[in-house]
Length: 385
Length: 143
Image (cartoon, rainbow over all chains, first blue to last red; front, top):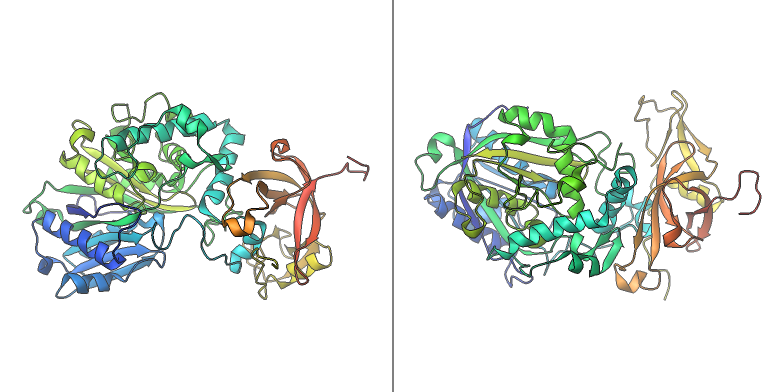
């Protein structure tokens, strides 16, 4: 269990524009976001001695970004070959590096040309080796197809409905309407949702997140140090990473997973809350990984906001709206702000806790949850101001 | 035009499975030490870690565990003519799951836990795929 409660804090955040076509290299997106985060913290590049990122072969090594930034000496420069499950893991690993004395100030980032370049959403090389030899020949190839299979189980077991998924999409879009950096700002109604194209039953177009070009970065340093810097520190109270048994190699290697109506969250929930000394009832804003509307339902249940099977009902009736009982994805999420592989959730949580979210501000937000991951593996953090 | 869909790349552990399909047999591994069946094929048993393995022929019958109906073809050039198609996770009577396509059934007619049975369909000269259709009555009578 994470045992470095409140030892480190996020001291700076930075991000680029989010678009369908950045017209720039991933390296330059990364460098821009990292530089902004460093400057936001009131630091100079020379103060940075660690850099961490994650990617699926669609980025550049962290040390390349450190080079472009002009970092004099990086004692900790690490890349994880990982997906959306790693967004919080990289911050936790920065904490571990700082605690172990490998670095003092670590910049964590995710950068991708996820729309104009390598698109995770589909149309990728149709490999059929290893585990996918048992899935791709049958036309089970894209991430929406993978997750739709899981969602069906929740509908079978608990009667979750398409409209319940739609309410999530509509609610999150309301937040994006207020978010000047969001890619999708057109208001959405349930009629719009029901009329949207069925992509892979049970998922409609609006159940599926965006594909984006862009980058997000944060600076992590010791809490003591953060208190001397330019912004109000956002402390990392707790964190956890992992999942259940038989996680498999990737999204399509999950036929041995014990229960497809639940994801990684139920396995790491106890460690998460215990490490932070807080519980679901303490959370003021929850930035939950939403590659699909359905993934929010599993995480609301898995992290203990509601009982198993009740995620669909819990997410309805305005409960997860910005002015509801549990504001979720106050930026519009991966569904409506942008898909920076979950790292934009960390940026949003930090800004909310600093009181910098303008029209989207949740009043008196003190505790935030950030989650990353949809299926067999994921990471989460509890932050507070 | 040729066959454009992905074809399996058999490896030493999976080769017997695909060879079985060519012969019209659905072969799965069974651990001789603890008796557990397993799929996909592995070198040792994930339950008891014994290397003592045999391939057995499955009854080919199972139930639909979950399914999707693909309506938007990705990529379009390959699946444009096939949509809508049904992909399912099937739990075989032996207790293991596998992924396949449901055939001989309309998408609207699929229900959870419905009984299905394997049908072998050649994809190319080299590969035969195990697909699944609604099961006939246990005594072999017509639907």
